[in-house]
Length: 397
Image (cartoon, rainbow, N blue to C red):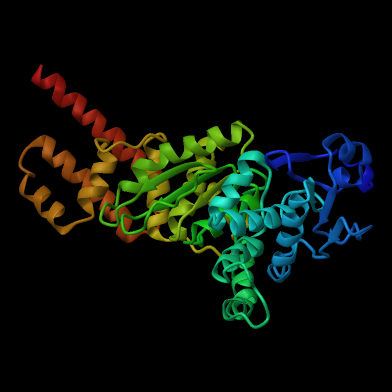
C-alpha cells in the first residue's frame, strides 16, 4: 500500500485555521482545496518542500530524534501563515506523533500552555494523537527553554545531555513488559513514577486496562485515559492479597472479554505473578502447579516462593472465593503469628476448639515442613472440620 492509498485523516485543531492530518491528506489537492489550506508544514521525510508556502522538517518518528531544535522555526511558519490570513495543514506520516508535537509547541508558545495542557487540548480535537515519549519530554524542555531552544541555550544543552539516558531507560521499560497472553494480558514489575512516562508507556503498548497492586506507601497512579483498577495491599496484612484475588480476576476477565488489553503492574513481582496465576486457575480450571507452568513459559527464570504457593493453594481450596471467615483462611492468619498459636493452645479444652486447633496445627505444619501446601491434605482437613462441625450441631440440637 502506498501513501496515496492510505485513508485520508485530518482534523481542525485551532478553529478552522490550523489542521493536523496524515500524509494522504497533504497529498490530496481536493482536500486542501475544500478546506482552503494555503500552507503545508510537513514534519516527515516523505514530502519535500514544494514552494515558499511549504516547509519540511525532515525528522523520523523516533524517541531519539531532536525535534526540539526545529520547533521555533515551525512555530514561526505557522504564525506567519495565520498572519497572512492563511490556513495551515501540519502533517506527518500518520498525524499521530510528530505533527501533534509541533502544534502543541505552537500552542505553548502563543497561549503559554504547559506541555500537558497543550496535549490535552489537541487530543480533544484529534483523540488519536500520541507524541512519542521523546517528543513529550522535548515539549517539556521547550517550555524550560522559554520557547527558544538553541545550541547555546543552557536548558537545551541540559536536555541534550540527558536525552539518550532517559529514552533508553524508557524503552527498557517497554522491553521488560512481559506478555502472559499475547494481545490480552501483560505483566510488569517496573512502572514509571512520572505520569507522562506512564501514559506514554501504556499508549505505546496498546493497553486499555491497568491493574495496579500497591502498598499504602505508594501513591495511586494518575491514569485518566485508561480503565484503571487500583488494589491496595497493606504490607502488614498477609491475607489481603488472597482476599482481593476474585476482584483482580474479574477485572482482567471483563477487560479481555471486551476485547481489551490488560497490564498487571506491581513493583513486587511476586504479587503480580500470584494474580496472573490465579486468573489462569480460575479461567482454565488448572491446578496451581499447572498455572505456574503457564507463567514460566513467559517468565522462565521466575523462582516461586512459599508465599506464592500458599496463596494459590488456598485460592483453589476456597473454590476461588476466599473470605475472611473461611476456616482455611482463618487457620492461615492465626497460624502465621505466635500470638495466634498461643491463643489457640489456651482454648484447646472444648471439642470445637480442639478441632480449630487441629486445623491450625495441620495447616501450619504443611506450611513449615513442606515447601508448598499439600492440596489433598488441605481438602481432607476441611472435610473433617465440616464433618465435626455438623456432628456438634446435631448433638446440640
